[in-house]
Length: 213
Image 1 (spheres, rainbow, N blue to C red):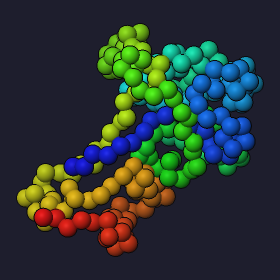
Image 2 (tube, rainbow, N blue to C red; image 1 turned 180 degrees about the horizontal axis):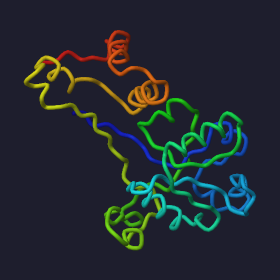
Image 3 (tube, one colour; image 1 turned 90 degrees about the vertical axis):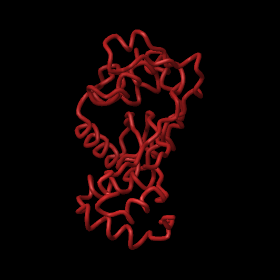
């Protein structure tokens, strides 16, 4: 099992960033900026925070409250597949959209997404209660970025019995969030058959394999 660094942020498409220069969550507290994301013209910008039950959704709620932009947005929670479909529609039409995003994930490989900057993490401005517990939002503060999230690539311990050479090789496989996002894109979005895709990946990227010792 290898550990690597991922991210979870709010993102805008690259074309929106280039056009409007919105680069920080601090900009979201400006009424004129929030209005750019108001596609239904109800006076509030739309922002997808995540899916019901995700710990990250509670964290994003806390960020919106403590960084001051919550009053200007209709903060939506719903199935991620619907959120990604909406993201793709907006990007194809080059319309403004603000959304929670994370890596590794196929969206960060498929689209040009610009993660908005946040105040750097400090223990005095970020202290999240267990998001799975009732009342976590009320007991938390999140006026800055949380600790850098870590991702873990795991494999079954059965490999040590069934295929020892592979089990010895996998811990030496150099991976990063960009690579794993590319895998996710190929299989989840583009419909590649996992076994075939993995064989092709090994064939073309064998230089990234470090020999097991």
